Length: 340
Ligand code: ATP
Ligand code: FE
Image 1 (spheres, rainbow, N blue to C red):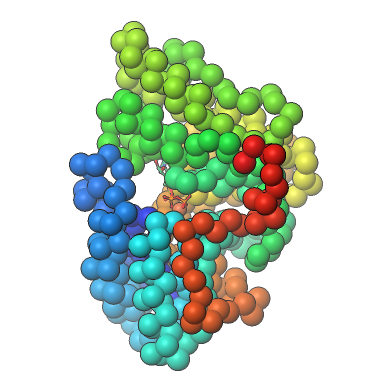
Image 2: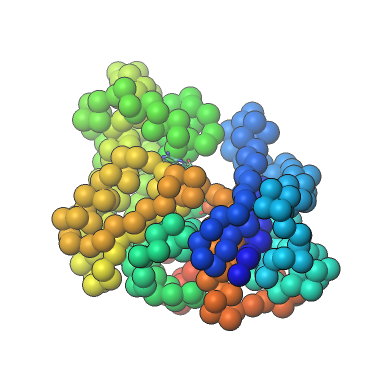
């Protein structure tokens, strides 16, 4: 089975062709960092217009590289949310147009399911269930993943996402967007124990994440003028690692899932990958993390989620909606009084 994947929910336009036996026939990702750099963050209207210009050309390019035509594809998988709604609509409407004109089934993919299932594209031994630490620009959650559409949320953030924390800290340090890679690079030459920063909620019996207090502490450390930027970067990264480790151990105690998995853009960070791999080993769980290119936004993960849904026989009608918000575990989001 060959699936064409389309992604445009944030600032990356991406197209990929992936088979159900885990071959990536061709893929392309075009970022827009330069366009958004002057604004210090993604400008939704600029992003949506850029996707309109870039995405159709990428479809042609990727089909050409794989030496296939649209007739050879078995289904079209397009991100239908969550994300910046103008961008989401570009992938979804492009997918609908291709599906309608070529007579192929449409699969409307949740971008978060793309991240959540991405480790299985490159790790054939990774079966369900697994405990997933989903750390991205907009999300920071622990989920028990038992299959397509089978997500149980154990924790989420009560304020910022992990990637958001990296991006805000980077801005405070005068680094560009996206902040994660810039902080990781600067942290290389810094001392992670030089600046005392808080580990919000660490040791707490409740399951959730919090990063707002850490950001404020970074702000104070910068303002004090007493620390080198690389020391603040290294200390910040260490604080995030410690928070993720603590919250993940808390969740591991609540599930006997045999594997721990990390995915989403922040999972590209080497300190985070290393620390979680050690935690899994200590706890006697298998560990899986996709290569860095598969952690940050791409269309191979969307095509792969499409392949998993295709195998499960789950398809969508051509009136499938684009959704700015779309939780993986809607039941958990309904619970009130959990602080989130
Ligand atoms: P979501 O997936 O929640 O909708 P998104 O798609 O915008 O959000 P991703 O592309 O999955 O987010 O991840 C982008 C985030 O990952 C950014 O916040 C970025 O700073 C962060 N990130 C990327 N590389 C690294 C890294 N090496 N270290 C830390 N953070 C990183
Ligand atoms: Fe993402």
